[in-house]
Length: 211
Image 1 (cartoon, rainbow, N blue to C red):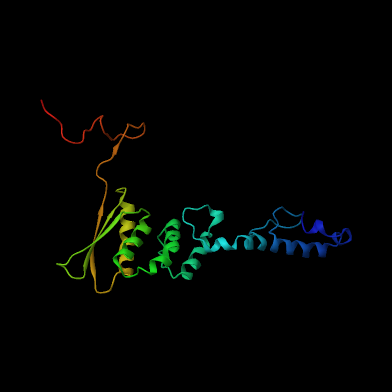
Image 2 (image 1 turned 45 degrees about the horizontal axis):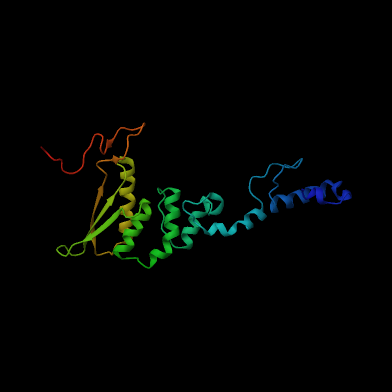
């Protein structure tokens, strides 16, 4: 039932009162149904916003949109936790970074902190390894395994990872960066969509006995 319909009959006959009531309904409830003479609402009402205001503080990577912060609110949320976001990151990457910003502060400036930040960006666990060498002081090597060889993805990842390293590494250190890719794909049975290498069908692993 609309606000106007809730008015006494003698007030519903007054166009000024109706117009004021519709204005309040637009602000508070968002006018879910069109009211004669009033334009369609372009934004949710204040009641709807307040009902889900707690979700604005949930970056919620991978969660349904209704239970996490709206995309337009992510820059504010990033500033709230002092997370540095790049404009070329996709939305899910930004959400992962914001969600892990506070736990990562405890590891800032450490090898583990840098490794975890890179894996959060890539979105794959156990994909980054960092090596240090006693023979080369202040040098470390970052190695990342990516699931595909797409040159556009590689170029974008290279830029983002180098920016993360520059942001997180101690100022007196320098580094090398190397990417690895899977060179062979083994599946247990042939598929109908892609050709491949199949164990026991066109590929054998291990030693073969000769008679």
